[in-house]
Length: 272
Image (cartoon, rainbow, N blue to C red):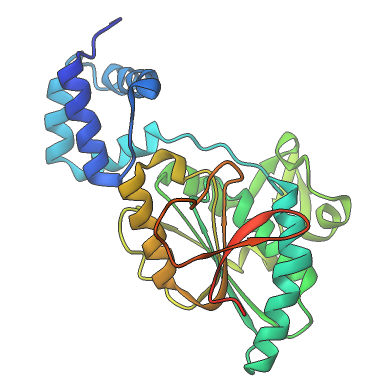
């Protein structure tokens, strides 16, 4: 099936993916789309990309499945330690003081593009460990991949997947199970997983922190602005946005302010 995806068909499928999700496939990552498409066509016992495009347009469940297949779900616990140093040493202390002055004891955080759950569980661990007693924690987590969300909800990870978790966190918040580790119920109950396509408004409001790391790279400029706009609308004044260390809002017309800390850079909504 080498070279099976002709230019016109590639453009048509790429355009359909973009219209449904905002994910943009350029020529440089065409091979990824071709590879995932071949796998799906083999499963359906067909070799016609044109026919498959017609199936996608008629079957929204198949569209969801295919969008799942073409996204890369790479993640790990405490990914990018500099972000977590910033989270622990800058963001949490600042929010504690700000919330106290407003009579609140609750933090809501969204992990957008949560993959198999390592990031939202990390966020729940960090908040549990660093907030004073009596604070309420709500961790929202969403992804385009239903398969990843199912794994995330289980909260079970093989031993190789817990590398990077500090020993004190591992002992306190995980139970050894078979050849891996199970996130304790006390942490799992803090995290709510849900399917969400970032092209659309999530309906979330009153968020104090948003993590959306290494997701914007899949979008073109217009789709990025759309996503960032949704984030702004979902966040309260005096809130924080983390994006990937290789991603930037530079040159994008947004209201977020750039914040540089001793550990890493992030963005804020009406800080100060």
